[in-house]
Every structure is written in C-alpha cells, then in structure tokens.
Length: 112
Image (cartoon, rainbow, N blue to C red; front, side, top):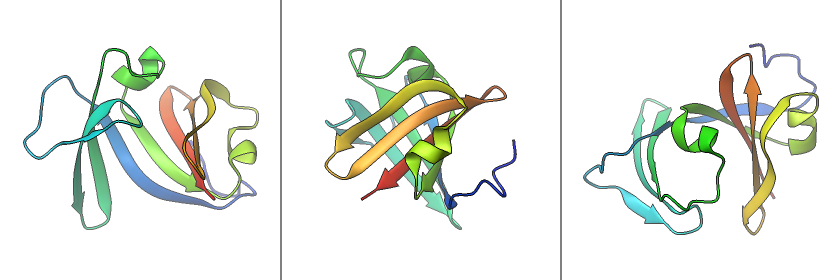
C-alpha cells in the first residue's frame, strides 16, 4: 500500500481497533454511536471503538481494524478505490469515507 506520490496531502491520524469489551476511561460519542477509548503515545494514536449494535456503519467498519489519514481532498483520496463506506458528514465540516486497499481498511477524512 503506497500512499506516497498520491497527488493529494495525506497525514497519519490514528489506528482504530473495534472491540466488544468496555475500556475504563472510554467516552461515548453519540455522533458515531460508539464508546471510544483513545490512547496516544509518541504520536501513535490508537482508538479502541465499541460500536452500538445500531451504529450507522457497515459491518466491515464495525469489526475490522483500520488506519486513518487526514486528507485535503477526500474525493481524490478515494477515487478508484474499493469503497466500503461512501463519504459521510458526521459533524458539520467533517467528512470521512472508508476504503479497502489490498485488504487493509483505510479511513480518509477531511476537516473543513
């Protein structure tokens, strides 16, 4: 998976790990219908995500780990890729999409 020389700016943001087990310190995020526990060490941000059963995400997103990247052009980032979840705005000004690249689940998101 090569994200270099893509023609758009891309920056690592986090690794998301779905779980069914509660974590002490997790916070409920109603906008995504999930409990999220964030760990950040030396710039390596990890999010353990415990989705509600009715969370509005495809099963792949609810069950597979993903790597998230912030991009400046969401349409360009997902162009030609296998779409798992099309671009969605979950908060005003924040859009995200999930794609599968060679078996790896990737979240691309744009702010603004």
